[in-house]
Length: 78
Image (cartoon, rainbow, N blue to C red):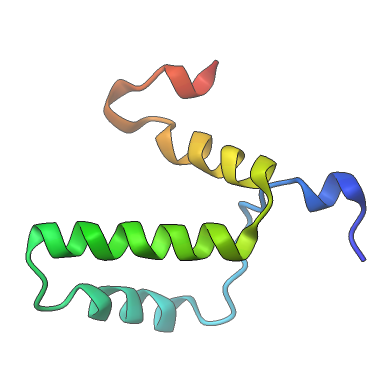
């Protein structure tokens, strides 16, 4: 069982057993969707994965990491 501190740490190291298959499935998920449908599918996927992860601190760290460098965002660095 992971330690308490490890349980609340975002893993940013490669961790997918089959990354190419995952990427292909992710692209397929968006096939034949318009932009609005694609954004809705992304939002649903994010919420499903967030629910699966369930750790508030890890989710906050993931949101911060996702914003870093996007459109000159400096809020994520603070």
